Length: 118
Image (cartoon, rainbow, N blue to C red; front, side, top):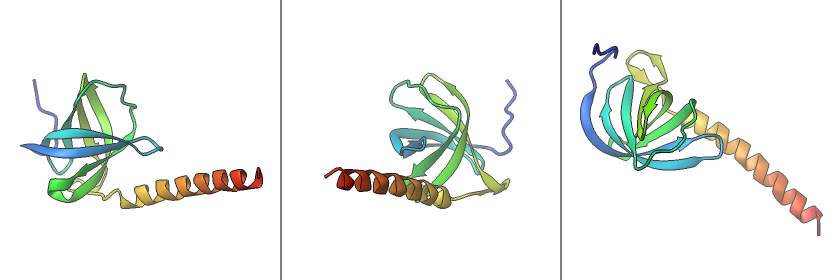
């Protein structure tokens, strides 16, 4: 089988946290290999993973990445990092801030509704 990756991945075993979807659902995972362009991650158990963007935080590297799901099989997932250039992963700080602001507005509306019901 031919390897179609743009860059070589280093075999690692880093603990990670994947934030999935707009509601901040998080799942712990293990990063099995990583490159500048993507990673192979393993989750504890199999679950339905939406084919969309996720945020992958790797504490040992002190970084988090926006990533697109490329493939998944059982509890193994291959992701590609969103990048400005082929070798420069983008921090997901802006995306997380945007999601946080949306969630804040939703919560504020709920608080206002609850206060008006009294």
